[in-house]
Every structure is written in C-alpha cells, then in structure tokens.
Figure 1 (cartoon, rainbow, N blue to C red):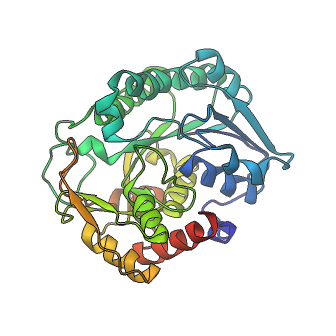
Figure 2 (figure 1 turned 90 degrees about the horizontal axis):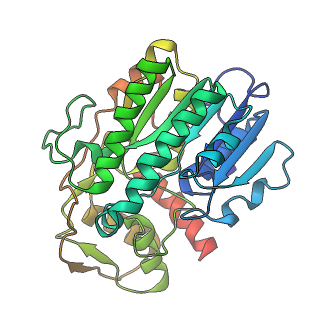
Length: 330
C-alpha cells in the first residue's frame, strides 16, 4: 500500500517533529503511521491496547528506528501522559467504533470514547502538544434528514456511539477555548480500505462483503440495501489527517466532513464488488439494524476550502485496491 502515499499531503520536512498516533495498530491509524514513516517523520509513536487493532498492522514498522510503540489504554491517564511526553503532534484515532456495539455495551463505548478522549486532551495539554487532530464521526448528524450533510447542521444522535463522538467535539471546543489548545475534528464518512478487519460481530460492511465474495458465501445486507453512504477510501482519510495537522491557523479548532461527496447504495456497492470479484453470489437480506441512518452524503466544501483537502481515490478504484489486498490476505 506504500504506493498510496508517495505523493505528500504536506510541505516541508517532517524530520524535526515527533508524532503520536493513538490506535495506531488499527485500520486508519496504521495507515497514518505508514504515511508519516514513509515521509521520514522524526519520531512516530503508537499507543494501542490491541482491543480492536492488530499486532500484524505494526510489523512493517517494527524495525524502523523512528518508530516507537507503547502498549497502553487511553482509559488509563498515566498511559496517555507517557504517550504524549516529548510529542509535537497527536493523531487521535483510538476509539471503540460500531453503532451495534454501542447499543449492546454503552458503558464500555462511553469509557473509551469519552473518558479516553478526555484523558488524551488533558495529557496533550500538560505535555504542550502543538496540535491534536481527532477522529470524529458522521454519526453525529443523527436524525437530520438534510442532504448533503453540512458541519453546522446536526440532528439528535441515534445511538450511544453517536453521543460519544458528539461529546468529543464539545470537549474539544471547550478545551480550545479554555486552555488555548489547537484541536481539529474530522467527521469520517464510512472509511474503508486495506487492513479493515472482516472479523468479529461488529465488522464494517465492505470487508464483510468482500470476505463473503472471496470465500463463496452469501453476504448479509441489513434492510433493503437501498440505504446510501458516502464511502471513503482510507487514503483520503490519511490525507485529511495530515492536512489538518499542518493547516493554517484559521482552519484549526473546527470540525470537518471527510468523505468523497458522493453516495452509493449498499446494493450498488455489492454489484461493484461482485463484478470486480467475478462472482455470481447473491446477498441475503435481513432486518434493518437499530440506530442506523437511512442516507448519508457529505458536503466536503469546508475541508476543501480550509484544509486543501481533495479526495484522490473514488469508490470504484478504492474497492479494487481493497479487494486485491484481501485476495492476498485471506
């Protein structure tokens, strides 16, 4: 996947800076680590407890002298403080994702996503971190029917997970105002790509569909399949993180939609994957999942204007790259 990150999303030399990526053994986090090391960041430290991340995602970096790893939990303030020591920039990706998981276990989702986030803000403040960019979520739009989604118009949350991600934004705003911190939130819209796990009860839809197609089993689609999402390839999310870390001052302490600005139904998605996989398998339709929104589409003009964000990988190319990665991994 290194070819995804040959073109820099930053200017200047990263060699003078130290970076912390929380959740760096996870899906998006490991891609940010890959980008930073490829572009010769001075130090890249990962904090992860392997709750949802994987040791294998870090194996390519272990021999790099500029890479450090701390096994720790963001729910532990001491781990957060240790991880932030001597760090210039933080990319905070650690979280418990999944709407169904949050409905089944709201307490743990709250502890990781809210208490853990607060611990990281305090640790970054006390360590004098220059900037912190955090993973927000399109789930914050909740029951708003407005399309496309615009950053300053949200609805009521539809799940405990959505509540936690909205609280992150509120805490970031308060810490920016109260302590003068520089914090930027990125509302991800259905990020997908290599290293996204198809395993477990809370796996995302694209890796689940791909695994089914490659193993010859009928995939499950919740609802009628006509619900739409703004599927976003992981390289676009990496670009947004890097641009946010080094954005102009007027772009800091804001929240941005990170997506492609196009929507695809689950049925369309399945047809694209089925064609790419040269499969004749058909899906199995089951009841809709509670807490899921019907349609999602992002207005990305704010990120384009203030961050210089421009998605470079659209859904068909991203699906082919992801499918090829899974072919070599399953």
